[in-house]
Amino acid sequence: AQKITQTQPGMFVQEKEAVTLDCTYDTSDQSYGLFWYKQPSSGEMIFLIYQGSYDEQNATEGRYSLNFQKARKSANLVISASQLGDSAMYFCAMREGPGSGNTPLVFGKGTRLSVIA
Amino acid sequence: ETGVTQTPRHLVMGMTNKKSLKCEQHLGHNAMYWYKQSAKKPLELMFVYNFKEQTENNSVPSRFSPECPNSSHLFLHLHTLQPEDSALYLCASSQVPGALNTGELFFGEGSRLTVL
Image 1 (cartoon, rainbow over the protein chains, first blue to last red):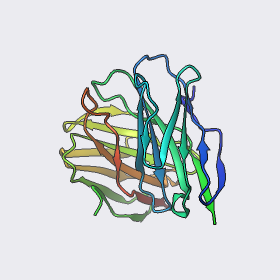
Image 2 (image 1 turned 180 degrees about the vertical axis):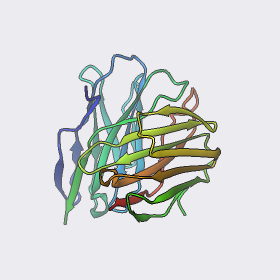
Image 3 (image 1 turned 90 degrees about the vertical axis):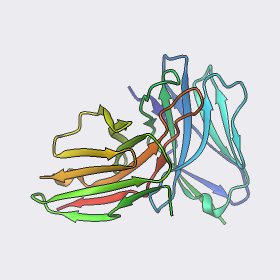
């Protein structure tokens, strides 16, 4: 079964507008971490933001915020004031299990975001 | 210069060739990873090394052979590959997740492999 689901293959947003990229996850663990990465055309995966399952507040990093709804098992990425440079693939990922040990990160299929001038 | 460097960036090889991909991290991390990224598929974890010891081999065919001589270097040796092995191979590093860190991955720019 797919553990990370990103239902939007592609999204368009007007420059300076906000956009929400959807991510739902599937786990029976109580302890897990959720990550978002950006992949520009250059290929490098850039870490954006992290949310722990026990974090009570939504994570924020600059123009990025994570809308974490634990009961719905969703971890949507919100990008405010979109810029042309935000055009890229965006991946949601999850690591299950407690903080110790190195459980691998599992990625979704990604959403391609295109910012329009 | 990025914290994780991969060479070569592009590689074209025949099915009978032997080549290697190299990854070097300058971040002082203690875990390194190989991921495969094919078109329209999620990133697939191939191998994980913690403190130079391989802890994960995600059912990868033996024509892919990893090597981790120290915590800063990771290789992926390739031999008798198939055309379906053409993909972007991404190397990543992290601290092993623990109470004081989330273990987020830092990626290189990838090596784009084409098998003819």
